Length: 275
Image 1: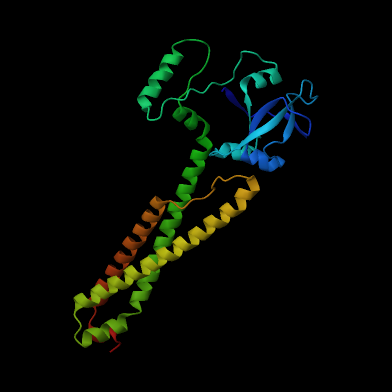
Image 2 (image 1 turned 180 degrees about the horizontal axis):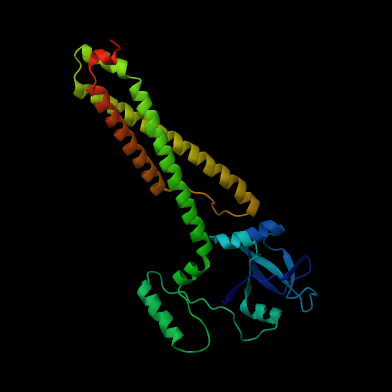
């Protein structure tokens, strides 16, 4: 069965008259127009509705959406190829042909097929799926890099803040550390305790940050998904980002704890307790 996806601005009218052919519409288009399976549409290729035909909605499909399609908001309707040709008055012509390779085909094989098709010299351009995605997604790549840069700056700034807070907190413990040393607690035990406190603060900070991030992501998706009428997720919590942020927080906290511990333990115990 030949099916073609069309994103043209066709003139569509919902009618109760009998239909002559079937079409499928995307879930987002159906929700926008209030369509259900069995509804009848009158579709024309121009505003005058000359040559308009009636089509029955035979199916509503769901699929992963491209961000560009979500922002553009074009309706998506799938026609049988003969019906589409009759509607547009264009016979034996096509603007785009998609060649789907077998599952598991290597990228080298796809590139070779592309080169073979280009060598035919039939007056058309041939692109692999990867090339097409790279060509149409440059805007999103730039936005992604911009967001990554903002994230890195935020993480570094928060890391410096964490180190400062850690240093101040451990410096306030010098009296307690001095008292422990006076009663015979070894430097190794005190140092290990300081490092343990630093690690605990880092873990607590990471958990709070993850919770805040998850709450913000939920709020962003809850607002923008109904706004655009899509299931596309506008924000996600990536494992790589969590790992990097958590690892950096632990490293900075432990480094700050070690630096403060070395500085505090070098002072005489009586000086630490204020004597």
